[in-house]
Image: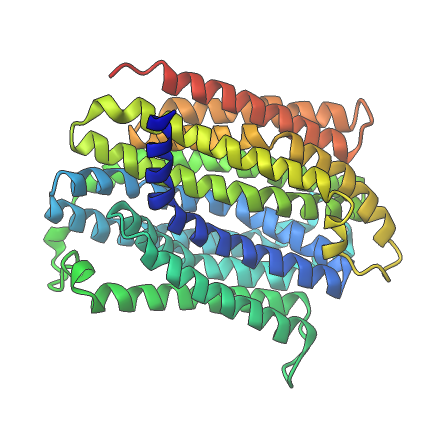
Length: 446
C-alpha cells in the first residue's frame, strides 16, 4: 500500500495541472449549457445538436494532437532536444492543415444538417452557432498541439494557466452576449458561439507569446524557417500514433454524438435532457482524461529512460486513483440527482418539468458508469505511453459502436425504453471498453 501511495502522489503532482486545465474546458461547456439553458430550452437543444455534429468529427483532430505527446516525452526523457524541436515544428504544420481542412468540411456540411431528422426550429437556430464553433477549431487545435508539447516536457502548469485565463474570458463573454448585459447585444445562442471563438483565439495567442518569450520553450523553435526542418519520417510517426488515437476518440465521442441524434428522434425534451446528462458525464470524464494524459507522459518517460520495471505499478496506480475519484463522483451524482437538472433549466419554461424528469433518469445511468468510464480512459493512457495504439482503437470501435450504439438502439426503439435505453447501451459499451483495455495492459510483459 505504501508503494501505491508513493505513486498516487507522483500522479497527482504530474497530472493535477493537466486536470485543472481539463476542468477549465468543462467549466466552459458547463457555462455554455447552463446559460443557454436558462435563456431558452430550444436554444439548449440546438446547442446539443450543433456540438454533437461538430465534436463527433473534431475529436479526430484532438486525438491527432495527442499523438505528439508520447514521442516528445520519450525524446525529452532521453535528452534528445533537437528531436523534440522537430516534432513540434512538424506537428504544428500538420495540425494547421488538418484543422483548416476540417473547418472547410464543416462548412460544406451545413446544407445537409436538415437531413438529420431534427426538429426544424432546432436546426435553424443551430446553424449560426455551428459555424462559429466550427471556425474556432483552427486556433483550438494549434493551441492543443502546444499544450501537448508543453505537457510532454512536464511543464504542465503553463497550459493550465492559459486555459484558466481563457475560461474566465469565455464565461464573461457568455454572460454579456447571450443575455445582452451592460450594453452588449442580446445574441442568445449566437453569443455563446462568439464567446467560444474569441476565447479559443486568445488561447493560441497567449500560448504563442509564452513559447516565443520564455527561453526554455524558445530553444525548440527554429527561427530560420528552413524547409530542412520538415521530415517525412516525423510526419509519418505523428500520423502513425495520432490517427489511431483520433479514431479511438471518434469512436467514443461519435457514439455519444449519434446518441444525441437518436435522442432528437424521440423529442426535443429528450435531446435537452441528453445534453444535461452528457455535460455532467463530461465533467467527471475530463478529470479522468487529465489523469490519463499524465500517465501517458509518466510511462513514456520510463520507456525513454529504459526503466521498464516501474511501468506496471505506474499504470495500475493511475487506474486505482481514478477509481477512487470516480466512485466519489458517482455517490455525489446519486445524492444530488434531483437538484442537478435545476441548475440548467428555467423552471418557467412550459416543458421544464418533463426535461427535469428525463434528466433525473439519465443521471442514475451516468452514476452507474462512472468507475468504468474512468478505468477505460486511464487504461488507454497507459497504452499510449507504450505507443500501443492500434489494438485499443479496434477495441473502441467494438465497444462503442457494436455494443454501445447497437445495444442502445435496440433498447431505445425495438424494446421501447426511449432515451434511457440509449444511455444503458452507452453504459454497456463503457463497461466492455474498460474490461478489454485493462486486459490489454495487464498482459504486457516487461
